[in-house]
Length: 219
Ligand code: CDP
Ligand code: CDP
Image 1: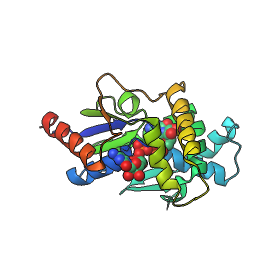
Image 2: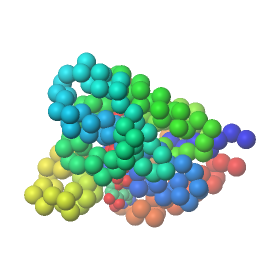
Image 3: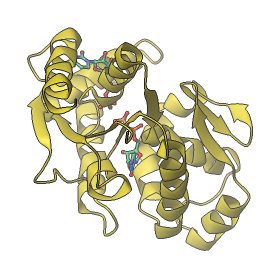
Image 4: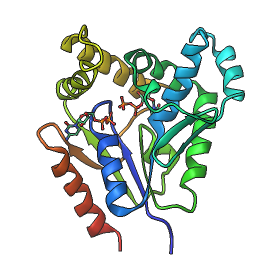
């Protein structure tokens, strides 16, 4: 019997990781957060004061970097960095790092290795188009930029009361623009993906929509 492989893509704040995590726990399969991998590398580069315009330096650091995602935790050089990678500074710089070819090659290899021989749900930007093109089911999760910015704002305001909603909406739009126009594996909705607009849906409603598709399409 072959593995169950579910790909989830979409722009920032669409609800991908929240939904994918819940589906993984309901179906007892592995969840892989690929965005966390790009964030972990960006965290290391910022922490080491690396100039993000210096691509050859980034590639040097990359060679000496170990990234893994297991049991719902992101590991950077053997240490869990779950909380450290969620800052606004990292959100605003990660797309710059994620467009580098060598970075993508290394992280995609890790993602494919983790998903090999396992039942998985993986979320990111290029999962259906590039990382797991043979996935059994592909979902493209979306919401309006305003709603996605609002969701991000509600998370960030708890840590940093100085942020403004309009700034966060703008930052989300800038990141989506870089992610969808980059040369290598940009964010796209593949023809075979099921698109779900989560703008006016609760998390529970979206999870149920996905579960229904999974039930109807996988035997
Ligand atoms: O959770 P959020 O939508 O804010 O972003 P994320 O999934 O943590 O991803 C952070 C960034 O990593 C994205 O904006 C992309 O630049 C990059 N990324 C990517 O290029 N390819 C992926 N498969 C996943 C993330
Ligand atoms: O992974 P992605 O960036 O696509 O989004 P997320 O981190 O899963 O979701 C962003 C925020 O929106 C989280 O705080 C979710 O609880 C919230 N959310 C929501 O309010 N309604 C939904 N239908 C989906 C997510």
